[in-house]
Length: 298
Ligand code: SF4
Image (cartoon, rainbow, N blue to C red):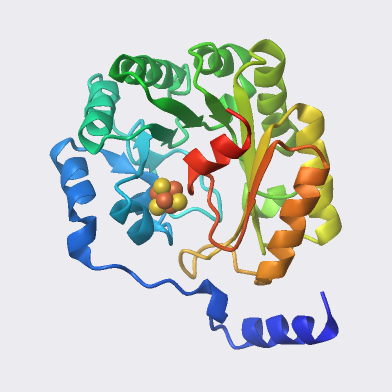
């Protein structure tokens, strides 16, 4: 980054305003309505809504969404995440079928299913992931991507999901090793890498994917080191996006990366051997997931 770029970002961060490349127009509510209606009718949660994703207008207008199973209350307190925390409700046995019905109605060909973390359940919710994958397989012709919690590193629970054979198994490491204590106090960097490594070792034909939010205070060297760790763990696909603070109670934004920095990091990821890398200010794990999957050589 040049000095002038550095001055520019520092100035932008100093006055608390979003830089011009972090602005998105919300499309008309009318265009988002069909997806909203389907979700409401089927009583389904999405991470798009729960995590206040900045891409919600674009994705809902494209007729897509990322389903969030196991309820909408998380048992962990990550400092970057807007999803509600607290005591979750009981599991809903028909949830997998409602997800499959939504996919049918929306005509999705690539579906991403994620969840809150459920440390309260003996299997961490792995069984519900498996049942959801099975229900989606019955829809037919659908690429299934899961974005899972770490299941506390429990081998059996991780493999319950992986052996159900989703096309893509994603587990985000979210940030660099040094920032785990500040940003993901109940998670563990090595444990998250271990999830990816276990899936790749035991079910090698499932594509592995992970991602990081940038701008939390990490250095470029730390980001590269995390990418190298992911490659060593057998991660095939990576996503890199700008962290945006959901509220004043969440971890502050340390810096807005410039779009060209994202481009450079994406190129570096490909050089390190990732078969696909999506990198940009608005990139999220599930953003244009179908294109990223195609890039990875499905
Ligand atoms: S990027 Fe993913 S989480 Fe965000 S709105 Fe789109 S589908 Fe939902």
